[in-house]
Amino acid sequence: MITKPKGTYDLLGVDAKISTYISHEIEDMMANYNYELIRTPIFEATELFHRSVGENTDIVTKETYDFKDRGDRSITLRPEGTAGVVRSLIENKLYGNRNDTIKLYYNGTMYRYERPQSGRNREFTQFGIEAFNSSDPMIDAEVISIGYYLLNNLGIEATVHINSLGDAESRKKYTEALVAYLRPHIKELCSDCQKRIDTNPLRILDCKVDKDNEILKNTPKISNYLSDESKDRFKKLKSYLDILEVNYEINDKIVRGLDYYDENVWEYIADSDQVTLGGGGRYNHLVENLGGPSIPAVGFAMGIERLILNIKENIDLSNLEQMVDVYIMSVNEEEKMHALEIAQYLRLNNISCEINSNNLSLKSQFKVADNLKAKFLLILNTDDLNKGLINVKDNATKEEMKVDEAEIVDWIIGNI
Ligand code: AMP
Image: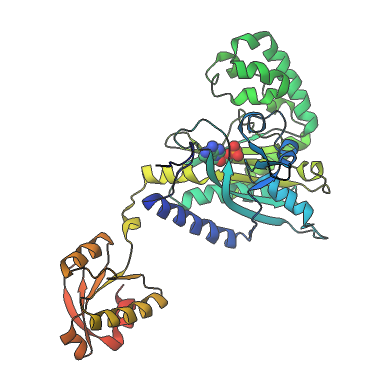
């Protein structure tokens, strides 16, 4: 038997239903907030991720799927969505002469060669949004609130942990102070942190291995190094989040794993188990660094698999078990033809319905209808059909009644 590659999964059954439910919620919200769908390639030139995510990040050094294609080009399966969106924005000149905010969203598979565990796969799905062309913290607040209210609408309780990484100048000063503080203690930290002190010191702050180490608890605070402008941006963000009624807390350990972030950054953390469901921030220099004009931007990404896990553990799934509204039962050719015709009318009128397409016995059809949690059974029989009638059974109350065949669609719509 050929099995799926390590770190991948087949989306099946109730997980598939939750995933569809999440996608619908996303699409509804995106329409309300005026974000447009963008779909970029699953693979891009390797260089794109080196120049955006960062040469020294864990993602680029350890986790990308890189290969040479048959034309000897260096290709990478996308480990995240922002780089491709920015590449597309520049290549298609989506910014044109616009002075409004360009608002885009994506929902697609990403690839990282990580150690698989619950909520961590090698192929996974991220929903993300990106807003270009505005540096106003009000748009940061809008973007943060979209993720927060998506979780809210899905019944997931979460807190947004926010921080400011400041502008390049503030970050440089802070990084120097952090390195000066950590250097004398570096041997007491994990081997990854010993490398990070020279390559990516800020990442030491969110090290999972050393998170309870006293050394990391007493690091200098970035808030003491922010410029007045960065402080003001962070302050405004907080007041806008208050207006939007987003549940947030300040967490100066949030630094994010990708190099392109600056100023306001955040993560969505589940209240139940403290798992990170998503994260984002400002990236005011990425468009320029990738060869485009100087356009500020802000965005986040959320992992769909982690949302599915959270929903499954915390929410009553009984309403997701219902598969169809109506099951139509038939046992002979004449009944089958009526069943087919009625099913077509119901389906075209937005009523979900199933018919007996396996020539099952009546007993088996009752079982199938129960499994599908059908609300109504239409139990066709030749005598009733000759009189233009349909025998309808309410599967919850077990009550049976006869309804005119000509009225059946309206009757179901009225009673569903
Ligand atoms: P990141 O792009 O690393 O900031 O990740 C944003 C979100 O994507 C995370 O909070 C997770 O929900 C999800 N995510 C990242 N990596 C994985 C993975 N390997 N498997 C499943 N979900 C992931």
